[in-house]
Length: 173
Image (cartoon, rainbow, N blue to C red; front, top):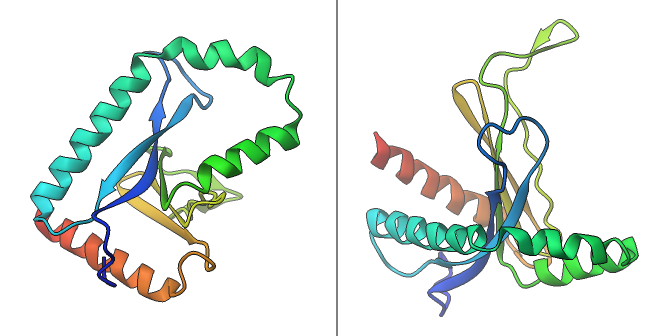
């Protein structure tokens, strides 16, 4: 909102876990679309609005669990290039894609060295930007990926995100 755009909502997406209770391993998720409010409001109002929108989008996903299974069979008949094109076309309608990945809650070692952090990478895939958060032990790591053809000042975008993150963490303290 730093450039005082005329819109109060931007199109975005987030990932909804479709994993069942007690199910272990593997990825089970579906993207959900959401209109992210960027108008003038307090942090509490914005947080409450996004939570309400996310819960509404998730409940709509929960109401249609068999829809994806119904399309899984016919989708296998579409060449992978066609599926990729469909995915890019859908992503191109987004300004911001987000994802939240859970990592190990305990320290992990690789080749004798302890992993001290992660660099989560989420695909831009046609969206203007992707923010991917990954939890590891007692920390959160965030990867920010932006399409420079959609965001002409990536440094300003990252600075705005850093300011918003600092405000959020101050508010939470």
